[in-house]
Image (cartoon, rainbow, N blue to C red; front, side, top):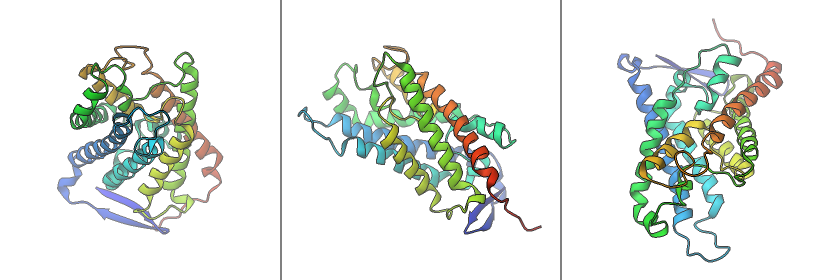
Length: 278
């Protein structure tokens, strides 16, 4: 298997040993990358939600700012773990971007949401296990803390508001990540790419995180939401309470397509093609 990584205008080609040509390394990298992402992401939300004193106006452990940075750093670490396999799995960090591969670059879409959901489910279970005493102290009946693991609307009576928010946020994510990794667009060095992708996630969260959280990734939301249903959380948006699970699935898929279209047809087509040595 060959992995090509652009570095300052040149291409570094790394040939992996024969055993790594199987699917196993890809699956392992994807599993651990996804696991790390949600351990950091759901972990930082638990820190903010579960340890307040109830004082009005209190900012617990950095509040929403810490949440956006926690998720952004989680994406950075996930991207770093999976960097060597990115070309083989997906050039983008989320299943919401499968349609991009098939529609805009003539490639084959490779859905991986079942695998990702398993890793996400497991990560959510680990976070719950770690913070179980805090969950049961703050929410003994588990009826209002499912939001530690998954997203919910700020305006439940207006689902279109959350759908629009998820669509815009994901479109921005895809647009900017494509700009970062495009070899036609002076991409950063390989070690800097995950940092910039994480920074995009932070920016999206700070700007578009209020209406419906900011899952901007269907599997990232559905896997932990499935765990909340299995673990007995009430008002989980899937088996109990308002059925809002579809919003962070449909919105990111729409946003992924729109963001990819905006980049490919609005930016990339004007960039010179990279000439490769024969």
